[in-house]
Image (cartoon, one colour):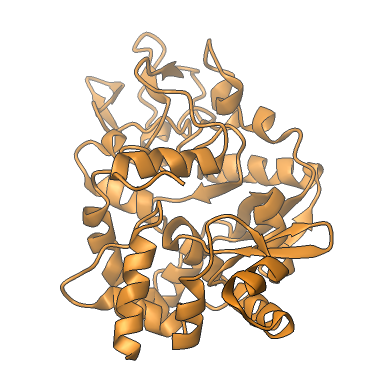
Length: 353
């Protein structure tokens, strides 16, 4: 019976935009068994993808409202469903596994889950390979943007966040996971940002803390100084910004293994180096997270297909030889994250909701 409920839950998650492919090892079922009780699995599959009031859910399912409210809040605190607020009222909805439930495990992550997740990642990547629209994208660092001739608002990190009025900062779950596996890196830990409902969820769950705009900008400066890659949600109205390193972030780790990382990472830019200004000091080569730069005939060169347009190389170029070039074939990101989900649904052939 329990085995059957987790198989159904796996199928349910795979019907959501982010997907949840089956494997030949059953590791995806082990993850669900670790996260959900059978009762929680059953209730999860009865929730909708849009936030609902407890009274409406109780009426729809014929359940006691008080008992359901407690159960839903417990599940939200566990990070296995999502909660939003309308004033003081709490609304609940189901959420996809990745990006979503995995990131919501920040407070509960342990070595066992880290090991299961690492085992599952290659299967997940292969199972979702047909999806063209990424949930996250790469956006240039602040100083890198100044080196471009054309910058849309959705590619300017400070423009993207200037009107945000509820912001949170939390530890990077990828660095926490790798530390649990014995692969801790030296990059800043408390540096990933949330906005609006995402930020509220993290703060309410004790996974993050609310910060003001001044601290947000300082954190972005720190990310630039450290050479971290900025990866916001792939939308014009951003919900979150991850400050990623290629040693811990799954997206960047796997991209770096490929011959052409640019084919795996959504980016609107690529770097270009002016050979007349470059002195081959190798600073950019050491800083590049994708090993996209080589030294040839005493001049740095971008290796075709390896640059992901993060701009990490630009701030340390004393010769100002590097700039970013806009890719002509990139589409404007969807308006918001829900629109991104709808686009992914279309690409996966799912029913548009």
